[in-house]
Amino acid sequence: MSSPTLALLRKDRPWLLGFLAVGGGLSTLVFLAHGFSDVFVVAEHRFAEDFELLLAPLSILLGLCSTLIDDLQSTRDFLRHRPLTSARLFWTRNIAALVVIAAWMAIGAASTWLHESAFGLGGACADSSRFGALAAMAAGLALNHALVSFAFALPARWWHRTWLAVLLVFSRYAAQSLLGPEDPPALTCALLLALGTLAFLLAAARCESTGHDPDRPTPGRALVGSVGLTLVAASLFGAMAANGWQELALRGLQRVRPCVGRIGPGELGFLTAPDEYGLCAVLDPEGSPTDRRIPFDSANRAAPRF
Image (cartoon, rainbow, N blue to C red):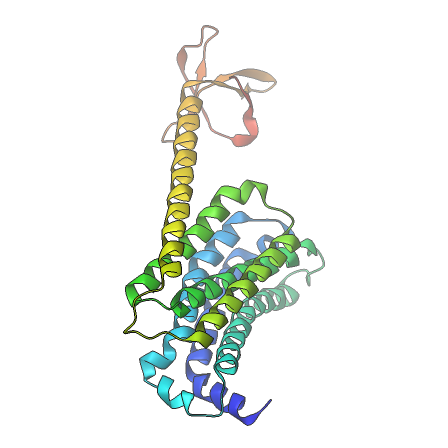
């Protein structure tokens, strides 16, 4: 590794190590809170949700910092007079940021595995397919970083860049929410997310190399692209709203339609949905609620009677 690259890494070391420490701590907290079984044995969706809830904002901040740190420190003009091309500057900084994101996952996984080795079964029951899911989660954080880096590298004004960054991140998570039930295998997801990360970083590098004169108006292509992205985001929002309405309607239907369940030893009957206290009313043969209540147990509810 050449001395200019090492000098750049030394310059960026404080904020890179800061993100590494904060992200590694949050990752360890989530991994240990859910335990080895939720991470490496069974596919527990709450683990992935909690991990993204804490680490996704940090990956977005990492993308902002890697793109804007020179402007914040007023060192951009200084670096232009050093033996560093814009491409080397861009790729050195972003590859270092991607290494930090990968380290978050590695630190969390290692902490859980070490805890299991010391106080559990030593990882003997781990499912190898879970490693693909962890890789997909890390690739998703890397995509967040790439989207923000691309948006703030565009030749546009600050408000325009910020708006595009918000639209890109929103569209990414909206698409993930809508396509969640149809997810391909974990390794395929990881590969697709990694390719998306590479594509957006290449586009950001191209924008960085061309530069932008703040005194010139925003290029027409950027304006057209922002309008198109706004329409896509609006369509995704409409689809999410429709899905939410459908879910509420189905839950309302579930409340008024009875289900078949066990109401006693070897006895089946019709039950209403549980109330706020977790109790189900037993229905008589005519379908009217009786005064009899039994505790709700998902194992006791059979097929819905639609």
